[in-house]
Length: 163
Image: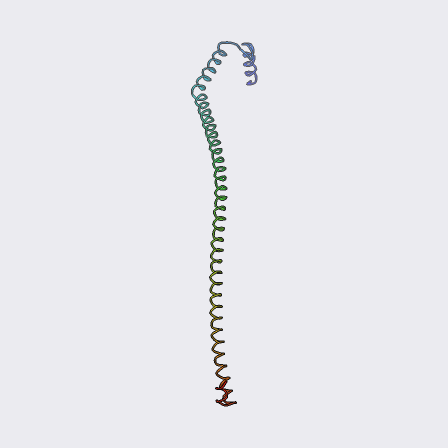
């Protein structure tokens, strides 16, 4: 029996206009859909779209600023590297000049010390020569005195005095 009731209900629906019955319900549903779309657009989609656009703009601006800062940083790093290389060259030049000056001063002091040593050597040689002459003079006097004494003892005092 229930099966018959279902068949009768389907036949009544089929008699009323079929699957697509174009009465006032379709335009009413379309108007409701458009109103819902407008409300959702005004309350949800536009603010969400604005927030997304704002966030995208914020990200783009931050990215551009970061790229500019990176570029400036790279330029500064390159500038500092050049300055550092110049400072190193200058420091090496100063060190080389200081070494040359130190070598010059050392050479002058060595030359002065060698001259002083040469002067002391010559002075010492002169003193030695003088002492040698004095020693030779005193030795000659002693040799003469000893020679006379020997002659006196050998020959006698009278013969030596006659000479």
